[in-house]
Picture (tube, rainbow, N blue to C red):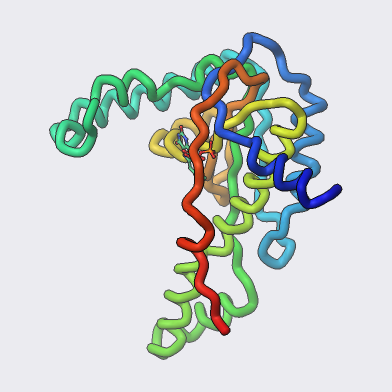
Amino acid sequence: MQLDELSNLIKARHSIRRWQNKEVPLELLKKAVDLATWAPNGGNKQNWRFYIITNRNTINSIADEVQNTTNQMASWPEAREFVADVDRWHERAGFFRSAPAAIAVSASQYISEADKILGAREKFDPEASKMRVWRNSANTKIQSVASAIAYLLLILHQMGLGAVWMTGPIQAKGNLEKLLGVPSHMDLVAFIPIGYPGENPVIRGRRPVEEVIEIIS
Ligand SMILES: Cc1cc2nc3c(=O)[nH]c(=O)nc-3n(C[C@H](O)[C@H](O)[C@H](O)COP(=O)(O)O)c2cc1C
């Protein structure tokens, strides 16, 4: 693949939030996950689990749970304070209900040798405690799973599918984990509704590269 082709692939992927009413073959989703697991990840521990959902009732139940928590939040006075259009925000919460498929992603804790050393010393050694805080600020667990999700979105796009990476639904984490059967040693970290695109999305551009780089010479 030429760099230009890769560039086109990357730049043509956009979050999709409307889908055609057309089933997505399970085999395609399995293939996408299979490829996504080739993403770099901390210690190659592959601390993830992908829940492929093709049952619309399950997607509806997930949307109901998210809608319920959003309704609750919208009823709090803080919602009026922090959300410009609470009614629209609240109505849009379950927009992914119309997706024919989804992949939920969970992650388990990542504990390296360094974490074990620091964990044993942090209670009595401030240097170790400081290093522990630094390591936690770079959260390998989440970085690893995010790496796979980024791959996954690109692969789905190449397959002609449209998806959106969502952390919003995590506000209903407890009930969603029960619904999906996520084991207690894992955390649900993202929900990705998927289908054949039913919209030409608004293209969210990016800041010029000069604004985001520092050349260290
Ligand atoms: C960690 C993460 C969480 C996100 N959560 C949501 C979400 O809860 N709801 C949503 O509609 N989009 C969500 N998005 C999608 C972003 O809004 C979207 O990627 C961003 O606006 C850039 O647009 P693009 O993906 O079309 O390039 C999330 C993206 C990331 C990476």
